[in-house]
Image 1: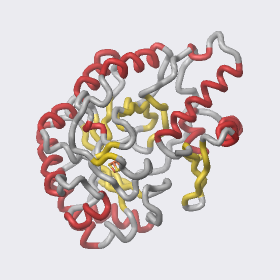
Image 2: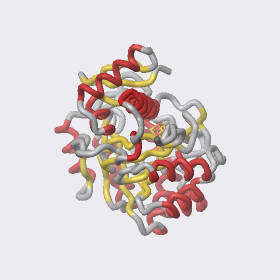
Image 3: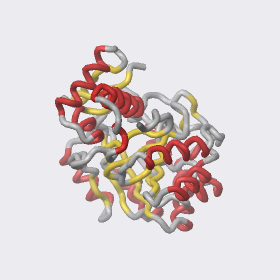
Length: 325
Ligand code: SF4
């Protein structure tokens, strides 16, 4: 049986990466920003200081255990409960993962520390880097991303430009739009201007489909998203909904060998709780991430609801489940 996961979660369905096995390398919730749309809630420690929050060794050991137990995933994704580049062991973690598997590595980052050469060199060890850019001007940056006082939009953009020059892998830039904050003609034109400077391989447009840190953050309807995508230029895509669930489960074979049905249910409930600890999920997300049917997913959800360790929350008519804080 696979050991309980402390650093990894999933595989979870990712609109950008398919099936993603996530690794959480900073504690909740240490970040350089405090974005109004953050699905993790408010930033509790706003910092730009890099620290060895989680050392590389236990992460590599946990991944090795998952690989030995037949892990199937499209990407190993470094992200989690805050800004992963704040972990000063990031480069060592990526190198350690590369030694034990060929599964591509993605880093999801807000990009604010890429002005530092050590952060750029750590990120350059990955295959895909997915930074964010939600503003092209300082006023909008402050309004939507609520940055640490030492981070400015110019620092973010020039860091991204330097990284583009040095990194030979893929850069998929996420632009998150929030109605009435960064969706005006001027704000979108400013974002487009900095995208042209950065020259990412892809621009991926997103909006608030999950419960957010701040109340009243509204997702944009599809018509407006299409118009903004066109304004942002040719390589901009709207991030579609989750891909359909694949046929097989996240682990092949070995996990439940020798265990009985209850044991499997306990493991599935633990996996579900670990997924929900990282982000709120709808029933569809759970089915897709765990490759199980709705009835089975409902069984585990109901179990956790009855224990009052998770609760439900509605957003735009869709129900999401999240861990009770
Ligand atoms: S969305 Fe990302 S960058 Fe923004 S506050 Fe949340 S964790 Fe930090």
